[in-house]
Image (cartoon, rainbow, N blue to C red):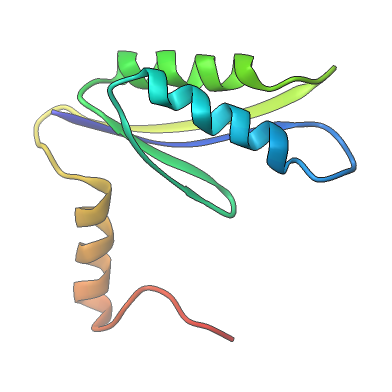
Length: 103
């Protein structure tokens, strides 16, 4: 079984959020998860949803601010072990090319 999540944690501030986002990402290292950060969030993979919830809570708590916004979307695949990379590969197979483009 594999659980995949898209996590976005950010302080509600006007300036750069990079330092606080880095704290959230670093907090994930305390958990048995794989992750990859992109410009809009961090994709996290774990063996179960409970681990994802705990990792997301730690990332949320790691951010300093009077107000913190967190979005968590989980795909809890209970009957298969597909990975995030495999999901992208499947789309690219149907597309016939990489699922990205430079403008």
